[in-house]
Length: 304
Image (cartoon, rainbow, N blue to C red):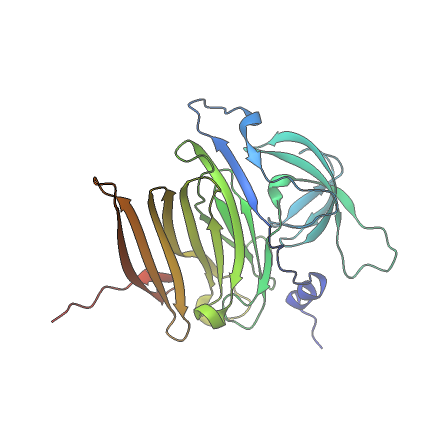
């Protein structure tokens, strides 16, 4: 029996759905200063005992909490680690985050063997990792989500049967601000939408701060060249929808899919307060058709 890298990856990294309360955040107040105060940044803090995943490929596990510390091991995208403890807040490159001491989770390790440990910077860690046949080529890809230094959610998809460094495709997705009109970045949650529901396998990213303001739902696709296995495909923003909750005004939407037709149906509802103080409700329906990795809005059929 052939043992492919994809099979090894599948055996080593068991598919574990993200916790129902899993969230990733990276945000900062808007400022006119060229160098914002690091104390003003907010980001997801991880705790000891928590299992996370490397959200970047070829990540360096370091001997100490420093960007120039010795490299203990290089880890591929999606590798699971267990948090041992959190270090101090620091600036590495253009990121503000904390260092974490972690232990690599290796399902192939001998019983009782001491795990490999080291330090990684917090911006490389994520609670969101998915293993699925995203492009329909019969092989499993690995997808992760981290926050970019531009305060967006960065989706990365790794093709295990392709050698580094060109085995990852990525796309950035907008997130809603935690400070409506006065901040950058915010929270995001992620889930997998199976092909049996949408006609194609998608990642759904929801960004909805608790306070009033805008919110965003995005769908990311990953398509390969004619379904050929072992070839790096392309991650794309397949559909992005925005809404607003600012009572008494609001703009919401619901999404449903027609899997057989590879079609997305969006119902938008807007409520606005008129001069008389009475709410005015408007409902619109939109149809999006799947083509070349994205859902494009279909033109309405003219009535005779």
